Image (cartoon, rainbow, N blue to C red; front, side, top):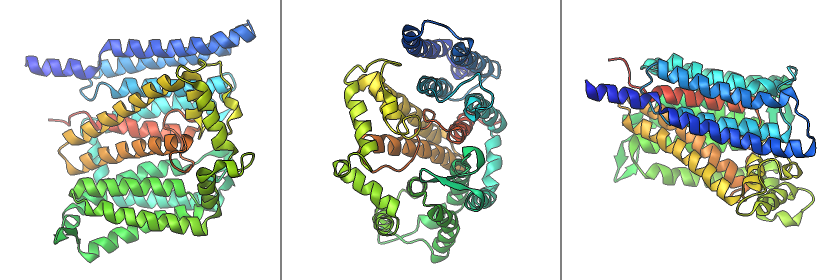
Amino acid sequence: MAKSKKKIRGGSGDGSIYVMTWLILVCAYLSIMSVKWANAPTLRAGELLPIAGLTLSVLVFRIMFRQSVYQGDRLIPPIVLLLTGLGLLLQFRLGNIDLTDPSMASTYAYPLGMCAFLVSWLVFRRGRYMGLSGLALPALLLACLLLGAILAMGQRYRGAVFLAGQVNPAELVKLLLAIFLAGIMTDFRKPLQQTVAGIPAPPMRSVLTLAVLWAVPMGLLMVQRDLGMIILLNVVMLVLIFMATGKWGYLFIGSFGAAGASYFGFQFFSHARVRFLAWQDPFSDPTGKGWQILQSLSAMFSGGLMGSGLGSGAPTVVPIAASDFIYAAFAEEMGFIGCVLLVVVYLLLFYRGYRIADQLRQPFAQTLAAALTTLLAMQTLMNMGGVTKAIPLTGITLPLLSHGGSSLITSLIMLGLLTALSEPGKK
């Protein structure tokens, strides 16, 4: 009995973690405001709203997770608060949100995202996430319908396709296809494990079924020219197949397939070729196609070891700094040390996600937790890799920090579901 009580206390979350999270956000806010007040020594009521919203979020999280006798992973909620709070403050610092202007859609992104996280956790906690196990095909169908609606009614902007109001439902497709992959991998686990002389050799019927089902959303994404999303989702699929089967052959086959797909994209999609050439040699067109990556590298270099301090840099010289290049803006003002700490926080989040997957015993729940964690991890890797010129740019946003309501809300729904997966089911 004593052991059970100890488990509940540990799962409810240590109050000191929430206090520390709040203090970090307060320090970040004061750093930004000190620069604002130095330039314009007046205080507007709207400038207090970010810290008021962050304080309220920390209090609500602490109370809800304590009063609900939460028994899941105790670090994910405060990590979510920290990263999402930093994202809000960075957008506030860049001038992309005005919480006093109800006509701006970005005004509602943070509160809606926080609500989405809590609702997702409450709806699916205590084993109710198993209700998603029978929704693999409906999730695939809904994802295809969303992609079709975007193609039919959307408009292209900066390489992506958006609906009215710059809404991008394609972000929700990631969650729907994660549910589909978790369900289909659970059903096809045994056939996929079959080998001949150590080489993966699943039944042809299983391979064709998977290929046909997966080709539909990939084809729609190809028509949209959303190569970043295609890469992200296919990497997640390969990781899940490997985790379900333990066969390294799938990773080798997938690597050859990725190489072929990359060659195809380079030959037939001009914007992919432009991005690759700009990545390969940005100085070949320093004021054109290479301008964005060169400004990003310059901003990170100017940040040095300690950075200029939040609010003291000039991140707006980097094109699309609030979205795709938010990491460069953060690096300029927080420096190398700040970037290392940020990466450590992300790695801790992903470690906890894979730890949850490892501890689950139902195949569907285990695969779903791995799918959600891999989606967020690969999205982070692709964004940071593109900004630092480690890989070509893909247009993938940085989870929880980048500007974009659709991306923020979808990421928080996934993290809310992951938090629910970390709790034990009903006994």
